[in-house]
Image 1 (tube, rainbow, N blue to C red):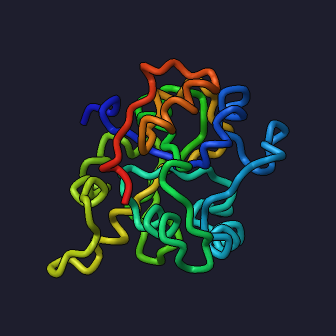
Image 2 (spheres, rainbow, N blue to C red; image 1 turned 120 degrees about the horizontal axis):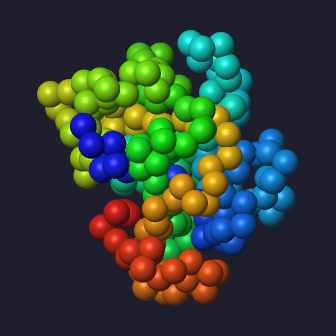
Length: 206
């Protein structure tokens, strides 16, 4: 499998982009952490991840998660305001895009999963397993537009497969950015990102 074509996505608030340009995508405990970070996720899920021990003995919250696909259940929750999450307009949400090859060729420590990382059925893999990733991660599920499938009750878990990076991700490892509309693209470009690295894809949102 061509790892340069296996893209990974992290959603963030558009107002976090200037910090990402200067420092990359940083962990909350990093020396370079964004003191003005605007969260968009489910706080209860974040707390669960912070305390959940995974098979390698580390805490899930020690890792920075990326999804292998777009239009995830989490994005649906963020846009609609379920589970105590404040609804956020899609024009405030930006996808930061990298690739599995970019991450694996770097010196960063990472693991990956075949489904949502908090699910008890999910398996975790190391960089040494990458040659078999096509047989481990269900890319039909991760790339699916919807996650309900009558003949596969495990489809939603598999759609939320994750790449988990242990260190801060340098800005140079990001291939580009996806925005909901042209106004968001203009705002991101005004922060200092080359407009050629920003694409508008409203169909990647709900």
